[in-house]
Image (cartoon, rainbow over all chains, first blue to last red; front, side):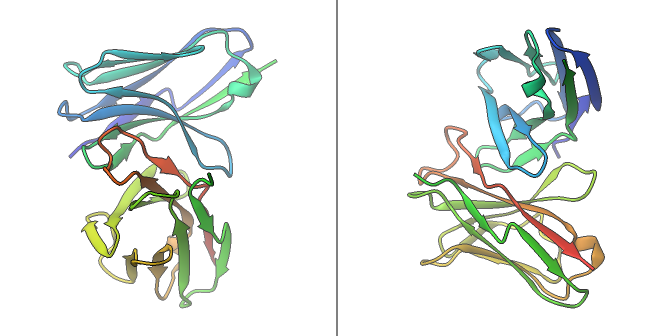
Length: 111
Length: 116
C-alpha cells in the first residue's frame, strides 16, 4: 500500500527566496508522481507530472525530481512570489488514476 | 471546453438526511474518480467508475455510500443517513477515454458537505 509523506507541513518564506518541498513514498513501483497546487476553497491544479521512467520535469520557475530507488521527490520553486502561496500536494499515481496524496505543505510567501 | 463540473458546491444536511453530489466530467471523458478530503487530512481515493461500471470501489465506506455513472447524465455520489463525520470536501476527477495512461486527470472544484 502506497503512503506519501511530505515535509515540512508548513513553510513561510520572504518573497524572492528559492525553496524546496520534500516528498517521500513507500512503494517504489510508482506509475507516476505529480505535484498539485490547492488554493483554499478551490480545486486542484496539476503543476508537474513525472512518469516513472523520468527523473525530473520543469515548468517555468518550478522543477520537480523523482528518485524511485530512494522513494523521494522534491519540488523546487525559484524566486518565490506571494502568488505562490498555496498548499502543495505530492501525489503518487497508479496506472489507472488511483492517486495517493500526501498531507501537503502549506506555503506562505510574504512580501 | 468546460472543465469538470461539480454541484452543488456547498451542501448542508442534517444528520440522517441524504446527500447527493453530482459530477459532470470534461467533454469526451468517460472515466470518473471520486476523492474525499476530511478536515485537516489529505485527499483519499473513494471510487473509480467508467460509464455504467464501477471499476474500483476499494476506498468507499462499506455502508451508506454509493456511486454511479450512468450511460447518460452525470456521475452521482450518494450518501444516505449522513453523520457529522461525513462533513468533508468531495472532489471529482475525470480522464480521457484511453484512461489514465498519460497521467491526465482533471479535478473539479469540489463539493463541500456540512452535516449539522
